[in-house]
Image (cartoon, rainbow, N blue to C red):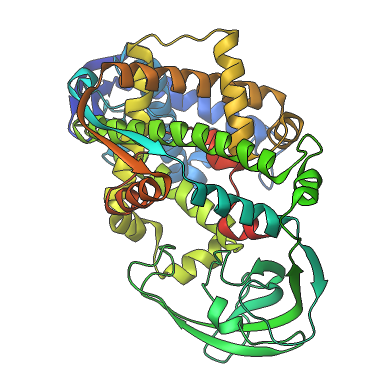
Length: 475
């Protein structure tokens, strides 16, 4: 097949428009080959297989054959034109076709194809960005708070006879109820464990469960604000049936030298443990302050970069978000869509601003890595590996088992490149102001910043894949 009168033009929406014509000679040749193919396969009444007359096949399947001819022509046209395109077509995007699919094998076939392609854009100059530099001080109060958390982790957990109170460990079964107070398919959850007042739950029913005893059940009605942290529940009313199956309490150990030795035999006294905690918190403060600067700089770069986003890229982002929501909520995707009360197209419009930012973040990050020709060595990979192990609080063997050795190596290399890119951006950034804060002040300020700004998705997909949901962390 030869394409004639071909015209390639890049149009808004990160699309390429391909106008083309196929001669009636090529159309007839392709059509005849298709007829012969079907003649050899079809088994029509009154004829041996492969012996049915071509004219009879055309009379019975004419419209379908012409539609298939058009589809074959378009597929071949895309295959031939793709190598000529300066911008790579997105493999997950469906081509848009202007024209009918009733190709006539005895006429020239003219058509216009529009394909979504990789956006062409220029990343904002990272050397012009500025950021606040934080010096974070760790106090004795911060150390005491961490000691308290370790004390709670080392508590003896025993069954409690009586009502659940704040700090108790509760096990519940629950499910959404419909208007007839029957469980909604796909929402049932059994054996969910969380600590009252400490662990975030999907439906935020801590206060509703407080005061309940093992074996007790009740129906809870929840009304969520429009700014609720789980978008699929924001502004909605939900009715839940909750049954408490177990209540346990923690008996805290005394804070003394013996406690320190139980935490780790390398500590001889409680003072040794506190010294170690302070050193770790100070290192954590340095890393957290660095990450805060990185997030601020990356957001400034991303916000300053203009990208004409193809619609198919937003659809892909929406699909990824739906899958993640379904995983976090414990629902199947069909049930989640029903709860959201809309179709994917409506959700894309609702989420459009966030989807654009998410896609922009990934595009900018990848292009920066390419433009700066970021490469890493074994030392960089080892540092990235240590960071990922600490980030997930899992041993390397566990992570490899979860994602596979090849994927893990890819995650490590991408993390190493990302960290090196971030350091390049940090080194080039101008200092807007300098602040010295306590650890608690820094946590409060960085948390407030994260709530008022859309945090750039600077982290790789690897982290989304192995990061647990709020409920999974609680368990």
